[in-house]
Image 1 (spheres, rainbow over the protein chains, first blue to last red):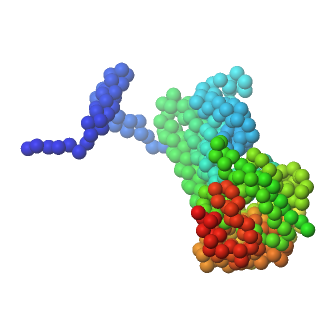
Image 2 (image 1 turned 90 degrees about the vertical axis):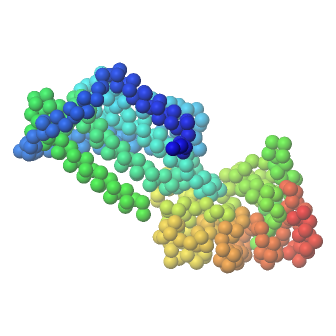
Length: 253
Length: 238
């Protein structure tokens, strides 16, 4: 029987290359098929979560939330300004545009964990270190999102503002902000969610909160407590996501 | 009597001449309509008069006075083809934007406007017949109502000259006609100078006191609606 393939040679070639790269990577790091069969062993760790420690986690949960909230808040305030400077269509000066774009690019490309480690020298180890580490990275992301939202606005209302003799700041308040507000709020909610996860991970590097408790108990092989903490993290992230979704819907109409 | 004078206005875009030595005058209470084929520089002319765009030669002035761009701008209101409103803001806020040139910069940034300016805005809204939609978001009202908001915003500016760039060509003809009718009536009442681009010749004939025919950036006709014969129309659209 004769077959004719519908796929192009190029598509076939790309698939082969991807598969080969995977094989190469596996060999390089020693990933063999047998590991896949060992994955179910994780079930052996499973223990009933020790719910009695939950009351002791309340404080850590609040620390994690507070770190995520303060860092998002600082990032939003800074990004509101940087976003304007980094938007090509409304930046006061093109030099400022390039300067800001570079700054936020650096803030963004260096991961928050590395910012955290670098910041130890300045603010020491602890929650404050976490707040700034997350805030710097988050500013890099948010300012970029904000600038891009501004670059996409409809410029026609700005012409109308120009003709009434509005100043630069008036143009921003009445012409730009109302147009970008919904997407700004969307990005802020997204970043808060993201920062909450980062705050948990950074917790393991000494900034406190749920992540820190998780690491301690993992090292003590107290899996009953580990699972109680994981349960708390799950509930926290779930609740925050629901609240975000609710707020998002509210804003859209 | 107050008049706006456009004197020897020329604009080049690289080698290309967009406006070639345009001169005309519009007096208080007069409606001047600019007609001509599309791409002939009608919109550019508006934007030059509004000093939204630079021109190479000539000047635009009120009664021969030389004023700065900002001083002149306050005296000029504009109604746009695509309304140029901010959909998320209410009718009232959009109209209040017309007052931005008059109010204190700082308080306006906090969203605060003096009562007397709010009153001016409310009066303009009433004039265009939208008093029952004051707090409605612009995104929730119809196209015709949006242009009424656009007109109210221009009126709130208390201008002496209103520039209207194809004010009804984005609207259903029937609604467009009613709006144009109201717009012209209000401007006559307030004795404003109106310079209006139109692409419907019959509207120009009905509503204008003076018609200017533009072709390839040059004035090829200037006269009353009576003088705009079929021959003249053919010359403009040649």
